[in-house]
Image 1 (cartoon, rainbow, N blue to C red):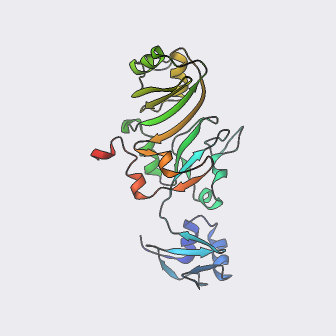
Image 2: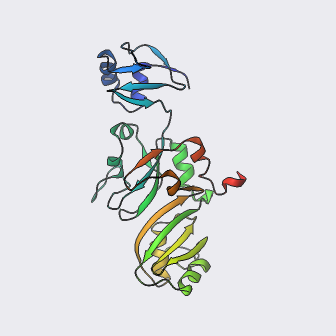
Image 3: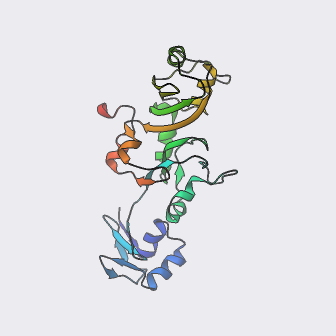
Length: 242
């Protein structure tokens, strides 16, 4: 990090155009440690910067890494077509920063969704070469059977895949529910695998990515939080050996 003019600081954090940020500063709406700074040309040290705007405190972040507990009937798209987009669940400043979902969950799938404005991070997390395990809880239309679990573990053939796809692990947790871990990240993979194995997915939620669990973040549906370095360290195939 380095020093930036105050208007650039605000613009980088998603508070609008340079012109609008300059007006905010000149109008005395921005303060640091209780002191109003009204010179938009002032060079501000961004390392550890905490500022207040409209009486709300913000921490400067070069990039943002977020986790959203996605509710049903929201689309993981910046241009949603049939349902509201997940960006509507975030403060406007984050949308201005060009925050994007890391991969996608179907509109009716709930649970852990990562989001960021860091392009390399998004690409790395989305790459199938990373083999990051993702944990899902699937509710099935028909009762879960031992045969179903074994089919998912041994691999099922999907129409557009050259080879069968297998779950990394699969455990029955209720009569109509199973916990399944996948690392391939194919389109609609859990739903298609269940259909190929002779059942049907009635509801689906993602509860973990890598070693980071939704439960550890304490997010209710529709809530989000910043991911700190200790959280990001868990987003690897094997955090214990990384």
